[in-house]
Image (cartoon, rainbow, N blue to C red; front, top):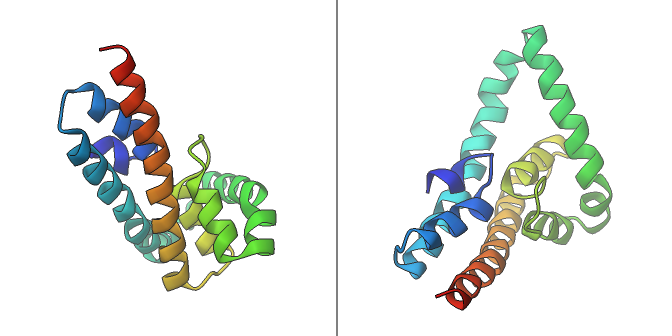
Amino acid sequence: MLWSISPFGEAKVGIPIGLSSDANPYLVFVAAFVANVLVFPIMIFFLDHVNRYLLRWRFYKKGALYVARKAKRGAKDKIQKYGFWGLMFFVMIPIPGTGVYAGTIATYLFNIERKKAFLANVIGIFFSSVIVWVTFYYGFSLFD
């Protein structure tokens, strides 16, 4: 669960680590999925409250602007053109740089309605988790 909630891998890393630990594979999926879903409200709270306070410091502001530019560059076309579906697809792709952290930052930057953005993120996380789970569950079973 910790890997799935961390920005260093999300469920894309949590699921393979959980499956390699001989844990119940279905419990691994649920735990990784739930942990990844929790990122959205935590990040929204951070962006709404803590981020505004930290932007007063130059070193933080410099890093935050770098992340914001990178998120805008990666998601802008898809999300502005396709809205809900673009955000969902962006979060769904199980590659580095996409996922709920980037989706939440995009929600904040593009001022997307929170309820719709949360739903798009949850659906995207679900399909991303399914893709990773199926790939690694059956991949690991080939070597048993």
